[in-house]
Image (cartoon, rainbow, N blue to C red; front, side, top):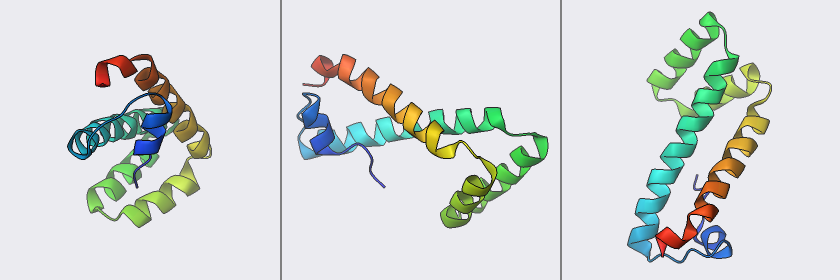
Length: 98
């Protein structure tokens, strides 16, 4: 699921062609995923880390998402905060993208 849309970027002053947009979203969504995972890992105990690794390695995104919802009570908050931080950083550096 793409969370950084062309409209969202346009709203903060970034206009990209389709090729640049695809590259941009790939890079920044990978960064967002990494930040979210790092925050989640900080909240888990050793057994939960093993379970998370098992689900991640399985490649079953639906099961991974279900496990995260069940085991990370602050998941929505983590995602919202990391998204806000990343979008703030993108907005601060918007002149470098045009």
